[in-house]
Image (tube, rainbow, N blue to C red; front, top):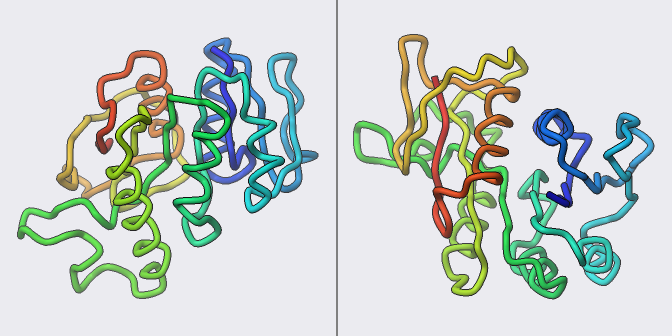
Length: 202
């Protein structure tokens, strides 16, 4: 597939890029500093500020799908969604957050006492992004939430898939960037959660 990846040099975006390359996809890697994108025969680095809707729309045009891996605080949901639509892209996958996942106690993870206060602004922006996606009727979006602890680790390929509930395993709620990337690219290749949010964890 021909995939545009927004935020290709971040912690998650770089792992998603590596997974896309591993599977043979052609990737346009979009970043503020595309010089940081690793060289690859199947990757085309592109400098772009996502606030520049016209420039971003031009870059996205002609792709089979767009993956967004940017901090929610750094984006305006409506503007980013409108840009994807203006480029006439129907398939849109978003690297989500865990704050809106429901815990066993029946409240959102982001509303629990143990949720780190310093992450609250990003968590709130992530919930707003998910709400904005849910209002879309003609966009084939997917929002993939990680588990509570999201870390640099190993690519094991061994994980569980869930829906709107926080996944908790023997070592808590955890997923590596690498295994998250597998789940996201699996969804790209074989869509099972169109116009839905889902989650991944151990």
